[in-house]
Length: 143
Length: 136
Image (cartoon, rainbow over all chains, first blue to last red; front, side, top):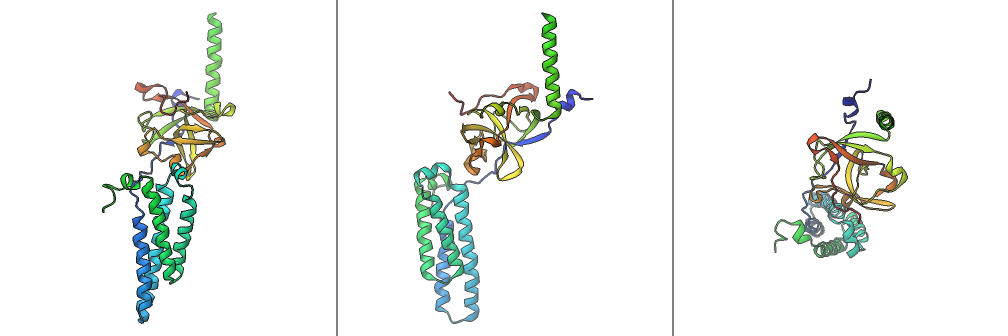
């Protein structure tokens, strides 16, 4: 027996969904981790202490992984389709920067770490020209 | 004259119950989440149908259901901002909505259900309010 009540009982829940993104983004986060990588590599090269050098390798790999994470968050969450019109190179830039971060993770190459900083700076430039400092920091980026 | 009206009403009503009972082309759903506020609120119950989009594409301004491309177990309700081979979906509350801005557009063939009317709460019974993006 089909009753009106059973007909009107919802069978599915549909989601007017929101991730509740906090909306705070800044390429500085990636840059600080990348600067750590650079400095750790320099300290590693200047040291004879086996244990210290081993720790350098370990910590640098962690920091490089964080660079990749912060770049990914910017790429996936901050940049929107409309930004692509202004910066058609967004995907290429992030792809190369993520690969560069992998290289920094895998090697003790000072030049690679410096190159990574330059790449993060170009992400930073795109973030700035899309209104990032005003829109995604609480009171803009501290000077 | 009366007979004909009663007969027509009976046929339409009977057809609706049959369609309903199978839940293939008519169904009722409950809204969760607030990204469609103020048009739709959590707990609203809606009548949805899956016939219209067999004949034509979704139009800007219509409220539709679609599987979340990032979580296939989740069915989303959003408004069509623009439609073509790909449908651009947005919440009516853009500051509190995860939509095409985050997960990209959805293939038009994936959009099958259209929300028609709200039947609960009764105080807000009626066709869904027009939101943004209404086509001229």
